[in-house]
Length: 251
Length: 247
View 1 (cartoon, each protein chain N blue to C red):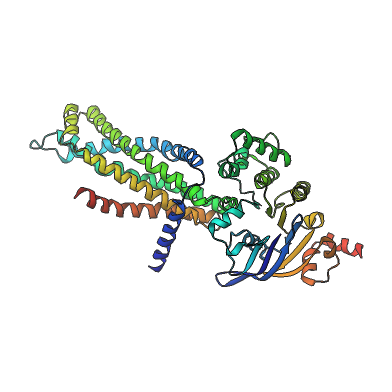
View 2: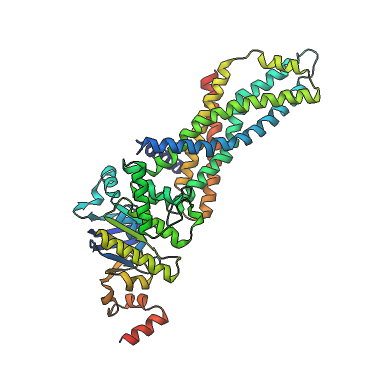
């Protein structure tokens, strides 16, 4: 479980997050949704500690993450996996080297054991035959798969995904969504996904938090979202003509 | 002025992170070898080409400037050797490498910053500053003095070659000048300077890249800032080191 209590964050005097309190449940795919520039990426990066919050507290289970020093945070970060929007794979390393890096740095396993674990993770994300390729030689979907494999290689307890479907075709998006959901359930991870893809919301959104202009505007499930009477949320969710037609049909 | 103090503070703060205890020495050793190849070995050809021509040009210029029956010809070889050892092979080569290696480091780390690769390392619990910058610093500080030695040797060979090919002086006199009044400490001075300059180039360029923020344009600006700042600091430290080591 990850809990944010009254967190605020501003850049150069401009408030980006304002008094946000939210709890993300273990074993569920928790989604943060909102328009571009609403503050959802800042929220995600604040939760993992890439941005220091101006006020408020963040808890990882019972541990107050925001009050920890560098060394204590480092211990928790080994339990965190993160999938970045662009994959953020190391350009100078191959697929195998990228996935193996956390094992090299933080475990004392033998080379054979490490390779076995890397192979397991790559098989888990259904990526074969790309071991020796560099990120520049991979497609968008393959990059996301490698990023997922790297994120789960140390068996994380918390998984963060920043726009995991951006730049992917609808079919590949569904595959990546399902993969993240399956991994979340299989390993009982607290997963937080940052997205504005409504397909993802309807496919895997077990808990959804809507962020609007730096505020938490709405919170619920994928079933609640269709019947919500929040105007800003509805403007966002039913922005496309197709979604509007679907809503009218549902009514 | 306040901005400069702020930047200097951030620079030393970054160095503090860079020199904190590495996660695993074996990984760092591998990265140092990789960086030696990328930053050092790949600079050999540029250093050699520039050195051979500068050695030849200095010999030609000296032969014209010292053209007098009262000045022994071996002084041309002596002057060429001194120029190469004392200034060219350490300082000028460092300025050239600030352009090649410095811009390479700043753009590589800057690109990693804007593509969130550095964030990814931080999330893994890796000290990204140490992991990315320390191997580069160690590699260049160890390798640049070797490039300086190579530059001295090739520059002197360039001078000999031009003397031999153009007949401006007797090659034997050039060789005599090479041996004349040789002080091994001059080489030590040159090697110390090149090691310090290597540290300056790598750390400042890495600093510029590490704090790049925005898009590819900003990476380009960081790269330019790295070369300009490294060059200025090299010239300042050239003066300081010469004052300390030679006087």
